[in-house]
Image 1: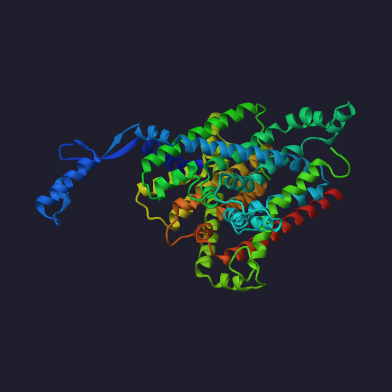
Image 2: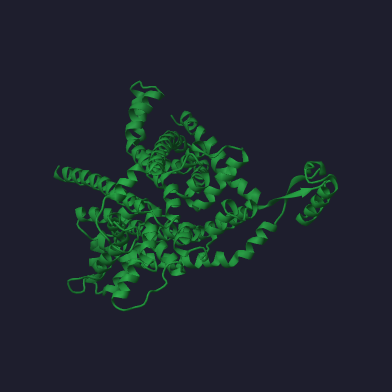
Length: 311
Length: 264
């Protein structure tokens, strides 16, 4: 059985090479190269020199002359300039990390008691409550973010409620706070699920035993529940932080055009006005390396090596 | 952890649930709001639902999403199940390497996966459309299938295969009669996960779609950029009801199954 069965994976291995490894290799290649214009002799020209030469050419031969006669071509050269350029956007990267961290911590603080509460319920109720907790997750991501636009606008619901008690309209949308709120709202179920998954495995009798031995509530949480739920915490943090740091939808819909995150910048390089795939690839590479670093740190903290699987 | 009748965790749970559902209920309420403005209520109406059903773009993109999700999920399930069986029988070094690469689309931020696939398609000069869309969806669907089938393979009793071969089965029969029934729950779960993630996907579709092959998420995205779209609220309400119904049915079946087994 064993030897023959290995062949079954071959189609997938080819697929994996073409659609996972090659694209990532492309990102690395794009990150470390750039396309330059070269003249007939192979000398690299700066954009200014190209513009000068083209203007001179058109003056000499008239506006309708074919510019290809100049003999300029394009060459791809190795460069680390793209990676260095990413440092110009360090502010945005750090800002994205900071906001994502805040959102992750808030999610953790909110999800922890909820997961605990649900895990202590009777089985049937648990299923129902869990279903209700993840139902928003099954709704379209964009619609959920869009819902908050309605609430946070100047004439939105929250401001209307505030005006009822005489508080002036607050600028809530298009702020960093709105972006964090959007992150928390969208990713909270992703924190509840792994936490719940681990907490159901915590036997109630363990908690009772601790209480019998005289531990007050704080000690029970700190010395029993918290250590036992570490794998879930690690899992939840990963599932919230990674999408939060790389999102561009939330920042665009709730942050307006001004609160840009690293995701927005990457998007701009590829599909936006500032078309520069090399810089975009460099940013993606930096982001990817950063995420992989974070994950290896998280994995080393969770040294039990327990994998928390979802549903 | 009880402080009086209302424990701290219960209070938190209630508040969090209010927080989770408030925006959804706002959307639902607004879907019946006769006024286009999202904050002023002028009257009850089904107008937006009617408009929604006549909205060609939304209906087409819904159809596109379903087709893409179905095709991607089916292909991913076949590819992933075969892969899981193959990987399961490899030595641990090779297995760990392949599983790390398999997990890459999951670990990577979606934007990196999307951008990398876009570079690939641009590099081979492929026209952006259904093909690129479906291929990209298969990329992130296959890992879910593999991750769901592998545990089932691990839990499977290998003596069953050997017993079947002792009784005269060739490899294909062992596969059909012993292995497939054992891993079917994993295959189904993998398929459903793949389908669900594909339907809901936005970021990867955003980088690999074509003008003629827009998914529902892309259409919603372009609709939400233009601030006046009450049909979006009607769409949200319908999605909410459908998802609620599906989850209710799944859970009721699950609870009934559990009760039946508890009675035995």
